Amino acid sequence: MSAVEIPPGAVLVVNAGSSSLKYQLVDPETGQVYADGLAERIGEPTGARIRHEALGRSRDLEVPLPDHQAAIEQVAELLHSDGIALSEIGLAAVGHRVVHGGRRFHAPTVIDDQIRSEIERLSPLAPLHNPPNLVGIEAVSALLPDVPAVAIFDTAFFHDLPEEASTYALDAATAEKYAIRRYGFHGTSHQYVAEHAARFLGRPASEVNQIVLHLGNGASISAVRGGTPIDTSMGMTPLEGLVMGTRTGDIDPGIAFQLARVGNMSIDEIDELYNKQSGLKGLCGDNDFRAVLERVDAGDPAATLAYRVYLHRLRHYIGAYMIELGRVDAIVFTAGVGENAAAVRADSLADLQMYGIEIDPVRNAERSDEARRISTDAGEVAVLVVPTNEELAIARQSAAVVAGTGT
Image 1 (cartoon, rainbow, N blue to C red):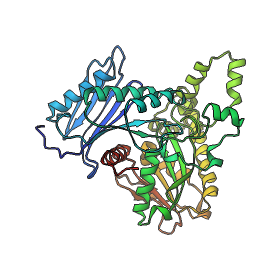
Image 2: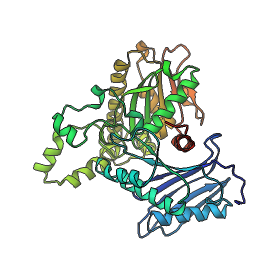
Image 3: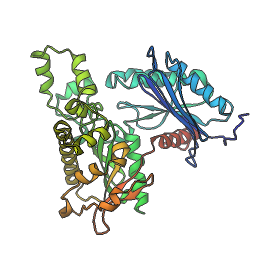
């Protein structure tokens, strides 16, 4: 028995990246978090570390982490030292974030050998994400073989986008052969926030049309009509759409031809450029939004241009989704930038009073961990800040599918 009394039914949520592993131990019913943390620089020769917090105690450790299996074992040891024995507390499930579900997966799915194979088969659609997700699944399953593992797919919420939104104007046979379509990402966050926003407004989700802006280092926006998404900015990969920390967002496809033919760049070099050396980082050298805003305030020309480009793309999508929805009841900001950067919220919705959108500067400047309205009372469109909680959403979906009550 664990030394710490944790009610049976908790879920361990795992999000494995190429060299990182985020985790959280949470009660899916109450939302109480018993432990969470982040292992970084997994597989690196030096500098590997774990930031770990459990039951009010925080630790920041530098430890060798040669692979994800070692990281999982180290996390289990840390929890055990906190009095939490993962194999003994009656975990309901381990919920794994998996970025790409392709056309097949559109609901929480209990993982078995066949599902592992399918996730691996989908790796070419998300080569930077699915392989490490799979490594995390295998590492945790080796440690906790008797606990059900559940895959929660980032693309699931957008699985049933209207055909006109999900289809690219590419040769149809080629698109079918290589499974090319708009899949959308950050779906767990968009779904959680859209549902929470409707509850905040005291209305059924089926009656609320909203634009959800998930703005972090990765960024996406969705148009949600009556609880169902009708469009989203990310596409076949998480590269399309808004300007991001290190990603280009929308870019003329012909630029890749120019870089290859004239610049003699390889596909891998262009991939690296688009995904890791572009966006805000490429424009001004910083992808930390706080640093960018500090430089803007100081009058730095490169940072100011980067910010203007970021806002231009953001306003472009907001306007497009207003037209697509026809009626907008709420515009909702979430994730690191969306929840904390008041300037971005104000500037992205500036001068839109004619559309019933009006930010209250005092409300917008307030900081809170709770959902809140930042628009004026007179504004016809409610502008909200709703903190996302992907881990809780993953935990609840995982527990529900294991209990047989999930979709």
